[in-house]
Length: 330
Image 1 (tube, rainbow, N blue to C red):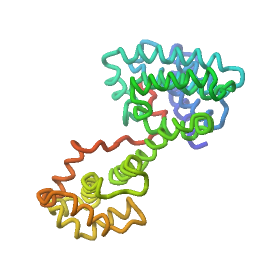
Image 2 (image 1 turned 90 degrees about the horizontal axis):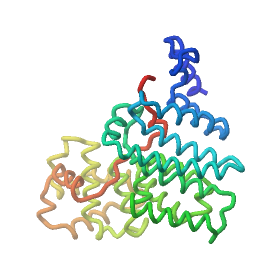
Image 3 (image 1 turned 135 degrees about the horizontal axis):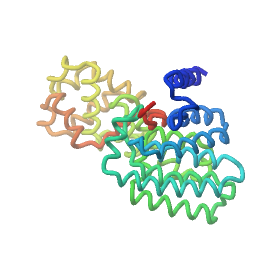
């Protein structure tokens, strides 16, 4: 209700400045329509949301908006809404194909990324618009009422997924908020549990909080689950501890050597925040035994810098999909 009240304030402000129904073509801003649709989706009012998103897509294609990325994002949301309405599967599928086509057009624009970064509400991480295009058809098919294990729709889903993995490294290429949307969907969980597991692994890592927590989740997810062989991951584990030390204690610890840091209570605190229930003594012993003596002599600051080169640590942050909307002329 607070969000809807703020949205109404924005509408009233625009109207007071002359941007109202009596002043075409500015009667309705595509991003305001899309934001209102997001509130309706949260209330499961999919038919009403679909109407607003259809307008948002139509108006968003106007040449006055340089940032065309929201059109793709809104088409994706529109496909989802239509897939939730009984008897609208074919229309949803048709829209999904249009989403894919339009995503190719946007991706072909050499300045789409610049326009996105300059003119969106929350440009934390731009996702290739073609990812939305591929995902829209996958999502619609998962929501089909005609889904049968081993059937035609499932077979087409598997083919589309394999192609998307080859082209865009699905689901790694998805933003965190998209992964959370899929994990919150019963159809994904029950119809394609194996694919949902891959999505869940990525979201689990990315929602870990600070960098240190995300790296430890990366280790858990990719090196034998929660029963970690610390000897196998001594270097990445040490990197995450050094990064965590710098995040929490700053320059006060930056010049400590690794050997000195391993004896500090602060490093135990950083570790306990990321991995509950495991004795740090076990980790300390594994690090000492597996790392070269010259590595132990390096400073915490020096080791932390290694993360940028030797460890593929996820750094994306979650944010609502409304961040895709343009601020142009709002």
